[in-house]
Length: 349
Ligand code: TXA
Ligand code: MG
Image (tube, rainbow, N blue to C red; front, side, top):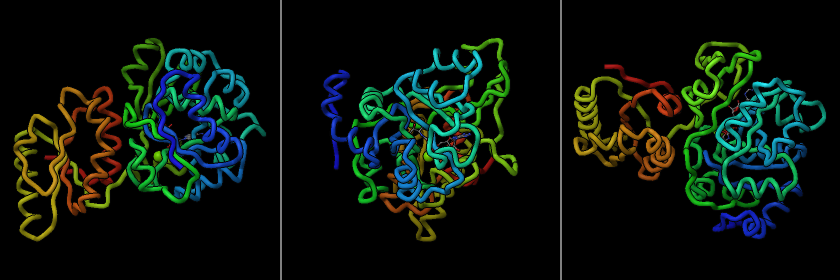
């Protein structure tokens, strides 16, 4: 079932979402737009509904889910009393692309949501349809990205349909998502330390500006750690079906290298694609050459990345070369996702 939402006003949205909210409340699986990517929602208190998420996505059961709420007071019921810095993060960045990991209150959520951890990631999405849906469903909504596990996250309703059509109850179609990459996940080591477990829509710079006296650390998710702090970071993620290679270096060298590789692929009869910044897009030939926008607007590249990866798949491209971008601001999250999508296949010139 597909519900197209047009309204922005909470009341009009509520009437468009009555059926979707009722399905969620009754244990159904409903995909919905957020400001980051589409989520696959279920009542976070209902174990059989949450089990349905893992089954539909083919998601490993040791990877916990983010719980989405519509009011701060909802978080208070789900987690143990939290430090002032958590409250300040909520005040400053919610609703918005920030997931805060906090100690969970026992018995409030299905244990499948937390994958057996003593903590839970909570976020309040900045999207009118998501907020209206959660509000009307009247329950905390567990929602991972609404893709098959390992695939690029969905930024359009049609991506959800491609991956999960037939295995879920419905999709709320709110058009393209905004940020295009998932939320930033943070934990609080102590009352002065914010540790970034997954870079995302709220950047390190945003956190530093808001908390000039706090220590902002990045957990290196790639380090071989027996108990990764953010369990999801250890799995293959966001990958297109073709072999993606990232190329890093001086722009001229990168362009020359990619051009040569594309020519080689063509000679060996393989289809070749390129993902590049607008500034150099005219330099490339290939079976599919996609622009991720200007290098001066990494927000645009973040917004386009996942849809582009899916376009290479739709065109059955076997080898894909992508230019690397700068790693400041949202560029950190962008390069994190691109590195994962490539399985860390990175050529450094
Ligand atoms: O933007 C987003 O966060 C999207 C939208 C739908 O809200 N959701 C999303 O969910 O990206 P998912 O399941 O694809 O990613 C959740 C990430 C995983 O890396 C998971 O390991 C981490 O959050 N996570 C969840 N609960 C955690 C916890 N208690 N401790 C540490 N990491 C946690
Ligand atoms: Mg995901």
